[in-house]
Amino acid sequence: MLRSLADVVLTRDAKQRIRLAHSGLASALMVVAVVLMHVMTWLGVNDGTGLWAWTAVSAIGLVSMFITIRLGWSARLRDPSLTVLQLMYAVGCTAVAYRIAGAGHGTPLLMVALVLMFGTFGLRRAQAWLVGSYTIAAFGIAMYTGAVDRPDIYDPVVQAAYFVSLILFVCGLMAVSGRVAAMRQRLRVQKSELAEALDRISLLATRDELTGLLNRRAMTELLERERQRSQRSAQGWSVAIMDVDHFKQTNDVHGHAAGDEALRKVARVCESLVRDCDAVSRWGGEEFVLLFRDVDAPAALAAADRVRASVAGVALTSGNAAFNITVSIGVTAYRRGDTVAQTLSRADGALYQAKLAGRNRVETSRASALDSA
Ligand SMILES: Nc1nc2c(ncn2[C@@H]2O[C@H](COP(=O)(O)OP(=O)(O)OP(=O)(O)O)[C@@H](O)[C@H]2O)c(=O)[nH]1
Picture (cartoon, rainbow, N blue to C red):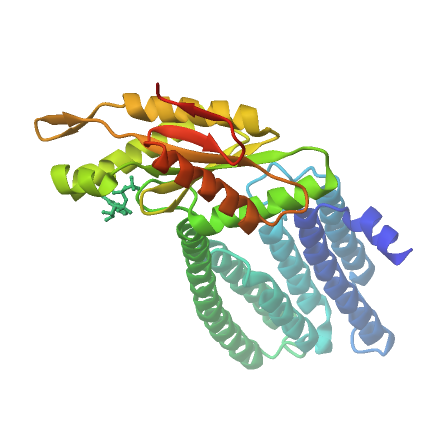
């Protein structure tokens, strides 16, 4: 009940709620000031001249601003929460209150301190100084006219002392709110640096540095998620382990840098041939693992053979020498009830068979095989 009332008054938009809550707080402060002013008049502290007009102007102004924000009319302004306008309006009303409060003029002075304390911390430096200077000017006028018109109540010496105190207070507040603004800016920068660092950490945690493919940990998690998904659905999946043939020899003959480049090329070939829903990872060294979603063994076998044939066709160079590499691949389909480790072990067995059978081949854990011939 309370929540739905709050939704109606403050809306469900988080930013709008904050704006309206701040505006509501300003209005609440104003209500306190109005009550105090009326109580003082009732107790005979002043004669109440202009009190009702002041009450009406104060209330109408703040309520209008609340409604303007609530209806979204201020949404397109540079300051959609109307903070500066509300603050200046409240300060102006308090300065008038100071002038009509008579012997009770100490109360509006404290009220304006409260208004400034609540209001200026969220402002930019220039805005805060604008509000601060306006406060000094508005209260300066109220103090001066009070001292001239009613020196019996607004003792000129006391008014001068109040004025100096007000200037000191505003300057002190501006200094503090400037420091708070600088701290908030530092926090914003740190927050965005932290977000960047987190992105980088998560990239490092899931990607292989050399090829940019998923790393072993990320692929293991993916396979486990796929296993769990397939327990709940009828969809199967297959996995392939691919190993570069005689890669030690490639490194020895063409150098480690050429070997690295060859691994990167293999990665790009795999990525370009698998579907978006499939996944490719560097399992370690010159070994890659491919996940084929919603695919049975024969289809995975065909897909893996396309990869094998493409890798064999990639022209590599090292200095002036041109060379090729080949890969052997073991493929298996997931069998319901198996663990990921059991599935990978079957694919590894098939890879071993492909190596034994002469390399540059694809074997499955079942009898079928495709070779380069
Ligand atoms: N350039 C390069 N070489 C790597 C990298 N990781 C592993 N290797 C090399 O890959 C080679 C793997 O050699 P082996 O495990 O003996 O296998 P192979 O020579 O490919 O022989 P078969 O797998 O039996 O065909 C080793 O020489 C490793 O140093 C890498 O990131 N970059």
